[in-house]
Length: 232
Image 1 (cartoon, helix red, strand yellow):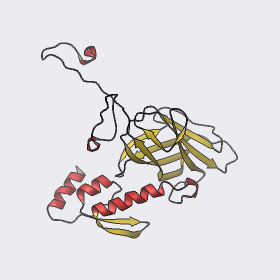
Image 2: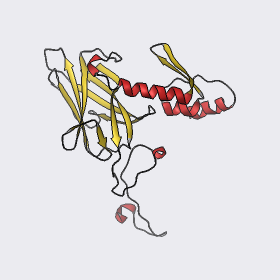
Image 3: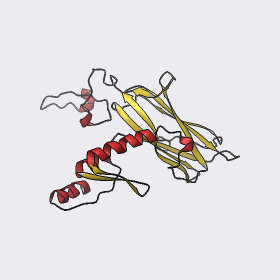
Image 4: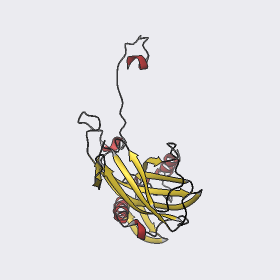
């Protein structure tokens, strides 16, 4: 509703200053854009040109070693040191097919001498337009992590990755004993390539969404008393 109202005001001839990391919303609402990085104006111009330059910068930044990244927040008591991807066969990869199993390993390090207390970790995938499309969080699936070694890997296993072909960036959050230890946006990039997710050789066009959901269709007579669950 808020975006729709701003669009109505903009079309009415009034000027709106819209601040966001959501490239899709910026592209839809704005004709001109300003890219501000660390309080400095980095680029100004037509919205498409600025968005393209920003997206290229994000993808470039996400290839830098995590250990040396300074654009992060948290108390630094435990830090992400690297990200690795493995396919369903356990092989290290840089890209994965739509529908394939994916294991994400988050390498972490700490100067602590003792074991880590309770740990909460999450991964959020963003598409090329900066829109969050899905999240993976150990607390959400009821997996408790406690008593971890000071250095190691936090591993997330995703069965049959449902993301449409394209480039995605990952945002990582690590909370240790209730305190935010490390937060880093655009920590890594993952390329998803085409795969036969539905076993039909067909995929929806990109503009119709980027998350695939398996589903079924059936028909019933107009006056049928059969419930949908019975029909399946």
